[in-house]
Each structure stands twice: as structure tokens, then as C-alpha cells.
Image (cartoon, rainbow over the protein chains, first blue to last red):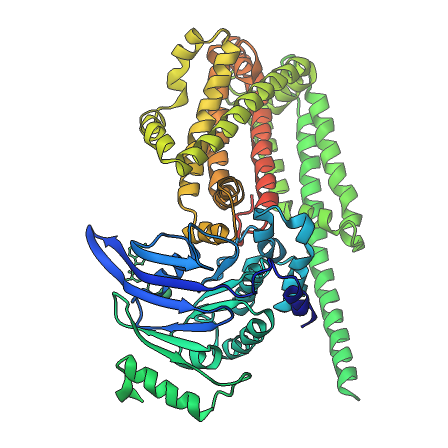
Length: 267
Length: 346
Ligand SMILES: Nc1ncnc2c1ncn2[C@@H]1O[C@H](COP(=O)(O)OP(=O)(O)O)[C@@H](O)[C@H]1O
Ligand SMILES: [Mg+2]
């Protein structure tokens, strides 16, 4: 993990590596078949620098929508979202998203996909070395020249992660990034993501449908209600890293969360 | 005997079996090539030894027979190469061997054509020319044919390049900008389905020269499919591609040039192929009706003089040129879209 050290040693700015996110009374609605569809209902959420916050909630409750708002891809219908005390105006490379689908550009090689952010900001020349570091970090050095259709699902998701990390984000937004991977790859990548986060010090926001994943990785778990999403619980996970999946405290918490999601009887 | 030894032994045996199979197929290939060569020699013999029904009509019968001998001779010369097993020759000889059925059928077809026309005179004369009449055209009229093809290619390239470039730009603009879409879409819907040749009378009247009018028509014929397909390509780009680029700090310019255009490229090429086909059609018609040069004009001129052999000769070269251009476009596409899986081979 030499490359990782190097990335951590070159912070993008003088601010702490992690970003503060402060969502205040955020509501959002879509139009569906001409009728308004409220998706978020007065969400208040403050994330401190360097926290790893997992968002849990029923499918379709609005978790991805909240992440899109924080990424700046859409403005909220109501409420304010502050990044480091400044209102979010639009997307910014300090807040990078990794989606459930890797969505690599099929016409670019893995290396050129990872280079995307630097290229878009005209930093290829000055920071090109970071591309190889990021590829090494996710273990794809040998596949730099491969095209996305030549990668397995796990490798493609690693490439997407490298594409995000190369920008040295201060907020890493993860929208079910491991959701489509086989369970073995998934467990490995959970550990790798945690390592990465602990070394680089960015703030992480993770949406997942896997309670164990949330408890294994996050410092805090937020539970949302059915759509329109409201925060129903905010649990602090005070366990040291590296964590153990069989930790009885985590098992307790898992039970509590299942209960919050109305699934207590199934366990 | 260790496992490795066994494996090596097995492999040696395999290799031996394969060698034998190769030589068996090699014998078949040699037989096929020899048969094809024999048929080409037979075609030469029929042409040269069986006197023409009209001894004065086709002065190039001898040359045509020589050409057939050369073809047969080339096949005979290829025989040792196809058997040598030298890796360097393998791609060429493999293709030759694969073409044996075609070589046989072609030789038989030439023999039949020769007998039906020059030898027995069974087909109405001016309309059905024997192969030596086509050869006569190539040998005697090649300067004019060459001029015509040069003129045609110049016209085609000018019109096609303008049409393709404008089509891509317009398609991207419609797909990208609501305002452009609002104004251009209805026009495209109205005018797009109209065959470009329908504009011919107006174009020849409105443009200063018939050449510029023809460029316009070819550009139009090319531009419409390229525009529509580029547009549909841009409109169909996965919106997640844009989300990704935007969160990474991409500008509008980057989104258009580095995301929308490459993502739409497979569609653009479909449009370019359609445009190429349409441009051939418009080229010939425009040359027949307006521009007094080029291959379309040559065809019409030949027909006017009942010089059917000239017409067939020109048609044959034209088919080769058009096919060559399509092949060229496929090559360009294969190179640019190498990232796609399962592409159609031309
Ligand atoms: N662009 C959109 N237009 C209309 N409805 C949308 C749009 N995006 C999401 N929705 C709806 O908003 C709700 C929440 O979606 P999402 O945030 O993706 O849920 P999840 O919590 O599963 O990530 C869903 O019912 C979805 O259908
Ligand atoms: Mg979601």
C-alpha cells in the first residue's frame, strides 16, 4: 500500500482531509406520471470530517436521491446542504461518487477511465502519476490497457473506485458500490475500503442494503423510514478497526437495526 | 515415466496427428487448387482454340485467352507455396485455398459466358458482350475511364466529407441543445425522408454550376442519415456517463466532445454507412443528368452509343470501387471502435 501513502501525503488543500456535510431540512420531490412524488421529507444530517456514515433504509425510500443532492447533481426541492459550511452549488471533484454500476466508459481503456477526472480538469500533465498510483491501489496495474468489457464485475468496480480516488476526494460517496459483487469479492473489498478510508482520512458516505456491511465499515449508521425518507435512527458504532464480523456488539446492533426496519421477527 | 513426460508424449502424439491431418487437408487443398487451375486453362483453351462466331467482331480474343492462362499459371505457382507449410505464406495460401470453390465457379461461368456469346452467338448481340469485349474496353479506353473515375471520386469525396461533417455537427447539436432541436427537428422530419434526387431540378437551377449542385445533393444524401443517427446516438447516451463526468469536474465542452460524441460513435458509423450508400446513388444520377463527366456520364454515354461492352466494363469497375470504399469505411470503424465486442466483419 505504498501508493496509498503517497496519495494521503498530497492533500488537495490545507483543509482537513475530510469534508463536513450539513444537510438541513432537506426535502425533495419528483414528478411521476404528472403527480408529485415526495422522496425526502425534512432530512437533517450532519457528517463530521473523517466520519464513515452508512445510510440504511427500505428500498426506494430516497437514499440514492439524497446522495445525488449531496453530490450536487440536482438541487433539493427544499432545505439546504452545506459542504464545509458553503452551500452546494453543483458537482465538484472534491465530492466524488461511486455508483452501484461501475459505468466505466466502454470506449476508454481502464487507465483512460481512471484518468477521466484529471483530464476533465486539465491536470493530466501535472498529476498524471496519480493514475498509476490509483491503479496500483486497487490492484489493477496489469489491466491498465484493458477495455471495460474485458474486466470482471469486481475488477470493473475497482476501476470505478480508482477513477474516484485519483481525484483525492474529501468526500467519497458510495451508492451500494458492492451491491452487485459476489459475496467473497464483497467481503474483501469491504476491508479494503475501510483500510483506504482510515489511511486517507476522507469523509465517507455509504448507502448499502446490507446491515452487516454497514456495521463492519461505518462509524455511524443512519436509518431511514419508508418513502418519503426521514431519519429514524442515528447509531454510533464505537468499535475499533479492524473489526470482526462475529463481534457480539455488532450482532446486538444488527438486531436493533432490524427492529428499526420492522424486520425484527425475521431474526 | 513422470507426469511431465507423459504430457510431453501426449503432446508429441497430438502434434503428429495434427501433422497428418494437415497433410490430408493439404492434399485436398492441392487437388482443389489444381482443379481450379485446370479450369482456368480450360477457359483459356475454349477462348483461344474455338474460333469466334464472328471473326472480326472481337479483336482482343487472344489477349483474353492469355489473361486466362496467366490466372491459371498463378494458381499453379501457388501450389508449392500452399504445401510448403512456411508460416509466412500461410495467411495468403489459406485464403487462396478457401477461395477455391469461387475460383472454380468463376472459371465455369467465364467458359459459359464465352460459349454463349462469342462462340455460339446465342444471345442478342449488342446487349450481351463477351468477356473479351470488356477487356477491349479496358485496353483501348482506359484513359477516359480513368478520367471518369477520378472525376467521380473527387465529386463523391467532396460531397460525402461535407455531408458527414455537417451531419455529425448537426446531430450532436440537436441531441445536445433543446433550442437547436426545437428548430431543426421538424425540418429534418419534413425533408429527411425526401430522396435527395428529388432536389435535382432545383439544385441544378439554383447552384452556379452543375458540379456544386451535385456536391450539394451528395452532401444532402449523406448528411440526413448521419444527422439522424448521430442525434439518436447522442440522445441515447446513458445519463450516468454524464453524472460521472460532472462529479469529476467536466465542463460542457468535455461532456460533448469526450462523452457524448464517443458514446454515440457506433450510431454515427451506421449513419456513415447509410450515407455512403445513398451518396453512390446520388452521384450516378447527378452525373447522368447534370455533370458531363464521371462514371455516371460514361455509363449514359455508352448507352447512347449502344456501346454495351463499355457499360459493363464501367459497371464492373464501379462495383469494385464502391465495394472498396465500403471496405475502407469498415476498416476505419474497426480501428476506431475496437473497444466494441462482437462487431460485424465485412
Ligand atoms: N429522476 C427521477 N424521476 C422520478 N422519480 C424518481 C427519480 N429518481 C428516483 N425516483 C423515485 O424516487 C424514489 C427514491 O429513489 P432512490 O433515491 O433511488 O431510492 P433508494 O433509497 O432505493 O436509493 C423511488 O421511488 C424512485 O422511483
Ligand atoms: Mg439506490
